[in-house]
Image (tube, rainbow, N blue to C red; front, side, top):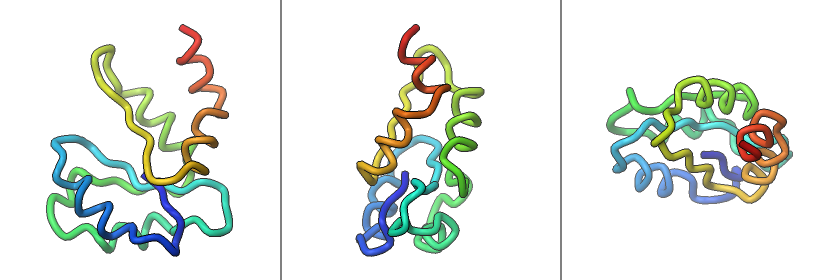
Amino acid sequence: MGMMHDKDYCSCIKEIGKLDCSIILTRPKYSRAADPAVMMNCVKVNKQKFSVYMDLKEAVDSVLGEIGKNDMLVVTGSFFLAGEFLDLKSVKKMLTK
């Protein structure tokens, strides 16, 4: 999950934090992107299921190493993040399988 600093990311984190899943806070390479470490300050409960990656590629590489055949990967928060995600070579390779 990555969002712009001028959006209400704390409310989004509160809602997504209710899900039974691992959550990565990261950022796209965009000037308005919120710092994932600052976003982590919004996490009030279940902190253990959140992790912070300052670089989207590192986050994706970490997830792709752990995700199973029947798992779901959701990229949310910003179209900038989703677009950058789709441009990653590791993702393009995964999508063409």
